[in-house]
Length: 124
Image (tube, rainbow, N blue to C red):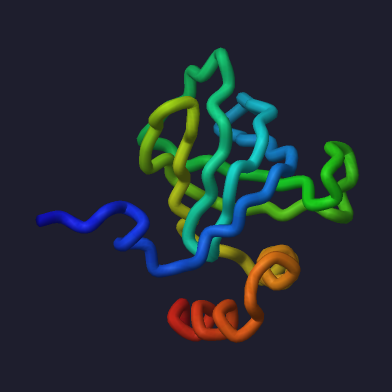
């Protein structure tokens, strides 16, 4: 008997509705964030989606809730893992030093701090 996807997850997913720009090469798709964790991001799927599935993506999440505010953006590097029911699931490959604090702050505002600390320790 196989485990469900939720049972296989190692990190807590936080449901958030924020704008996110998905970049690949010279293309940018404005989308909406569905949820985020330390290891992944889910977004809605744009109507016109012509991305290269095996190439990396850069996701710019606008944490202020508005596009154009560079001070409140969170940039993550990820690969597309699945496309289903109008959702895109991305696996975050790494979080650089400039973005770990904004990611932590975003998650900390929406989940139990002790759980987040435990999950951060598992990343190391």
